[in-house]
Image 1: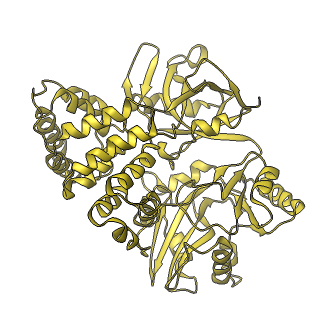
Image 2: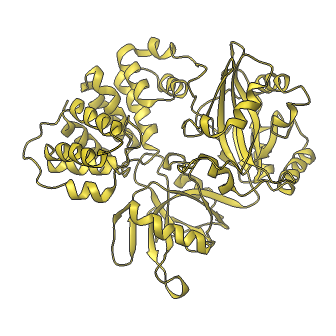
Image 3: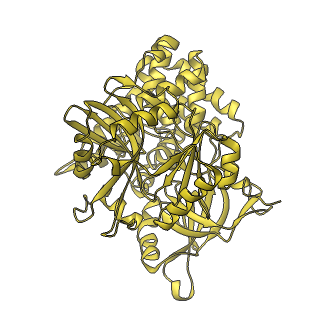
Length: 509
């Protein structure tokens, strides 16, 4: 298969807002792909590369994107091989070698292929919700139920691998994908809840209400004495968090897959700033002065027994048994099962008094399912917050002259399109944050007009807001009210940003 075929499908996906049409275009390419091509094609059409981050800057790629060839000849295999070689290049002389590899690749590409490669390698294609469309496309191309594809993707942690399995072996091959201790599972996520009362009314009495921490999601696997830790994006951080591994290694079990959060606490047991927690996962290496504490709220496997399909009530019983000893009890996420409304309100009050964000209300009859499938888990915070994608930033004026200040905010399109702009804000920014934006944003820019920078959709920022209002000014017909920056979320990708539907749900009339 030629790269041109993939680039054409990507253009067709971008040209329509119909989820069905997007999935159909992708399915058509997948049906024509050879077995060895399915993995890279799936990754590319989901806006990613199989090799992970390649560390290629937009300016470098823009400089190389010239003198295209007239007729397409680049194959999918050749491009994937070039990206693999690029990812493996490091050490002395690597900069020149990387430039040579990229130059050869771009020199063999047509104009359309060059544009596709630039967008792919800079992350501009990574719209997040597009992954859901690709899952539907894989199901259509393989002629299998979409739920079978979603489950296999959850258990394998890899969409390209799932696509290859589906097209090669169909439903039986997908059903054979099992949870493996040592291979991360895509996490189940909570949907925003409007209020504690609404969440309880929606889910009923058979719920658990737990603290929602201002921390980082972790998934911990134990196999004997070997313990490994992943973040919510399935990035392994085992070497950076030895204290978490030690705590899990001390538990009375042989094999386990545990889900939870971690955060840094001060000497009084209060949560430290979110940035302190995230400093343990930074590219500059862990900050040994900041110790992390684990808080576990789910168990997916325990001593040879898979628990994914069991109701949450059963999983919580298993977790309670694992953490029954007094020395392990502090690892359990605080919460109350089957609370009265007054008890649930007390859990929320206790969480806020302890400096946490709020609570999560979970249905006790729900199995574990990756992503936000349904509303079995609902997070409730006293202040509305949304995780949005930063689309652009404008140069400030007055005391902010010379700094990139006012940011444009986009919500995720649930049908896989470009992020939908819903507002701007310059509120809540400290001098330190302004300095960071000014230093960081130019490296993520896809355009630098006189007024500021347009960014590839890579950064996720959490904003607090008073609600939403109808507005003809923005394409989604809705605008944020009094938005202010809370923090950037390096632990989240655009795939995990809130959707335009979540913004519309805040409309007051």
